[in-house]
Image: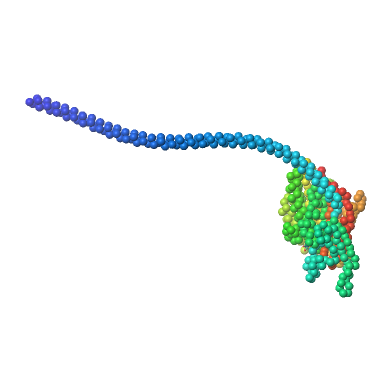
Length: 483
Ligand SMILES: Nc1ncnc2c1ncn2[C@@H]1O[C@H](COP(=O)(O)OP(=O)(O)OP(=O)(O)O)[C@@H](O)[C@H]1O
């Protein structure tokens, strides 16, 4: 029994041990199963995520494929456009080549026509005469306008043209009878190249002289004088009133403006210009630099160099490369003259002012060179000695003025009558200074400025007589300084 019991117990133990090992195997399998299930769940998630990625990427792929086709089409169009443009460029290059040839031919033609224009312009100027005289009457002002009378009534002692193209002026000498009525005793008719009545504007006067300014650019020496008694409008004509504006500015600033504008146009024709300005006054036969530092004691000499060039020693020369420089040059000259005026009463009336503009042109295409000079001269008041009642310093001034004005008349007369003989340039500083700008090689214009006042009758008569003498002169053919 005991043996059976022990056998049974062994069997129970064996069974228990078998059960435990089965239990352990079961537990292990259960744990493995759980891990496998977890792994499976993860794999499922990963599969789902990968599926989503694949679906979104295939959508992106489709879009990219669409874009690619669009770009391909665009590239093809661009290539076509490029090809078309290359054809156009080739055509344009051919056209440019043709146009360059055309431009070169036209430029050549322009140069030839410019030379022709210069020749024709000069012929016209010669036909008009190398000395011309324009008479200008200034409007009556202030007390000159008799009370209640019109401009015409205040100037009944003279007959003037009504329009721009008149050439005649007539002065009437009258006597007044006891009852106050006036009767004409004598009339004095004069004829000039142009007579400007009082209402003529600066711009209209300039139109008449602009051709001469052109001649200076073309290489000729040109002199434009303003002659007349004090207060007759010489400075107004040449420079304008004090602080002039674009309407009232005178011949000097207008000439410079025209020169700048024309020089600009001439660039197209191959011409490059440089301009230099000088401004001096001749007072009591001494030269003063109006662009200098106001030192009136400085001595200046006139020198004539080879090639018809005249220089004045130690005077300031301003390169005029902008119109503004011209404005400041006139301002400096005005200030220097004002300094002189305080030292010597009414200095500007008692001195000649000479503005000289040198115009050097070079044609880069033809290598032609032209050297023109434009002198604009505001002469001293031409009052007669007897009338002026001057004594002392004033008498000396008046004598100097009269001498130099008479010398100017003599030089012009000698140039006209005595072509190969002696010309008395040395008789005055003014004529000596202008030696190379007066004469066979030059063009001269004289403004005779007239006061409208009946009180100035005698002075007006003298001025018109002097101008008539000048107008009767014919100076030989001008030669352009061109190399
Ligand atoms: N055409 C004109 N229109 C309007 N005003 C003028 C004209 N001409 C001259 N005047 C005026 O007359 C006055 C005298 O002129 P201006 O000073 O030019 O004379 P002038 O002959 O130069 O005298 P001076 O010999 O003293 O220098 C000035 O006030 C000027 O502004």
